[in-house]
Length: 351
Ligand code: SF4
Ligand code: SF4
Image (cartoon, rainbow, N blue to C red; front, side, top):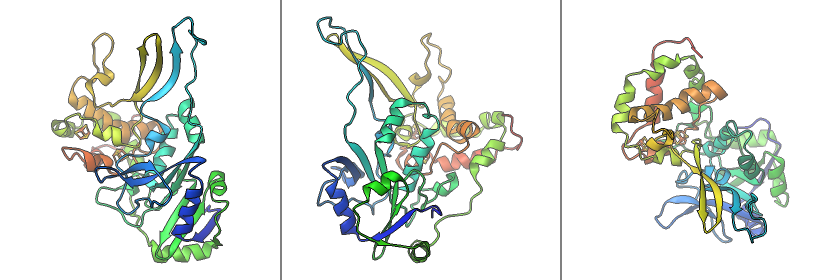
């Protein structure tokens, strides 16, 4: 629960959804919905529909809305007769603001973690400016979730502009930023005091959090080289088929490649998601590949999330959403890798 809550508004689902419906012309509103395969994924919210919030995390995370796949960086034309020929042109950007409704705490927090490496990235930052996140804290956890291990929690509000707390008789909308306040300015609702909210919270949400010592702090104490040379990497790599599913679905994997696409004298430069699990990801123009062996790539993925990122930025580069566990075709589980790493002997940091 966020002690800095600015406003708490008690209302009901139908009124809340009517506010979304009113905004569908001026904003692009996305919410969890069932796709043609019956899986929960992000889709445009339409009047009269109810977002699918009771079937767990959407298949895809929210990273595609800050870091689209692919993203146009600029356009160019080499046709001398065309206006603007031989000049780089900015691609058209989305005119509408985007609202994500029904974002779970792990996904909302992933946006905050991705801000760290992308601090100076103008494309990422301009998308964040036009993005609003309306979160839904979790009332229960699933077998693959472990957000409390990674510094988050099922009732965390990091990265949200507003949080919608669902309880048996309605919802409480918690306004957490100016964007959130503006979006819900026409919501007619009963104002709740902090005490009233806390009592409602205790009866409806209880405490889902576990007391776990922050693994990021423990990992920072581990000597880099003993983690690097740990014998269990080969066992993990023997199972992995380097399909890259884990990295594409992961909300905090952010590696990309850049290519120019040209056709008939016109073209565009794009960046698109890439994966450290693919052999070509690190191949140099000379043909040398510093991570040519599978065990090197598998180790890099986990070491980046659990050791290099916390050493550099502080938190783990993982929000415990469990997508990589849920979707890995050979059942590799990052929680087991983290446990193995925490058992590596030695507590002196060599960073
Ligand atoms: S999803 Fe599983 S098998 Fe595929 S690259 Fe990731 S860890 Fe390896
Ligand atoms: S590493 Fe796995 S559990 Fe962690 S954020 Fe990425 S997909 Fe979720």
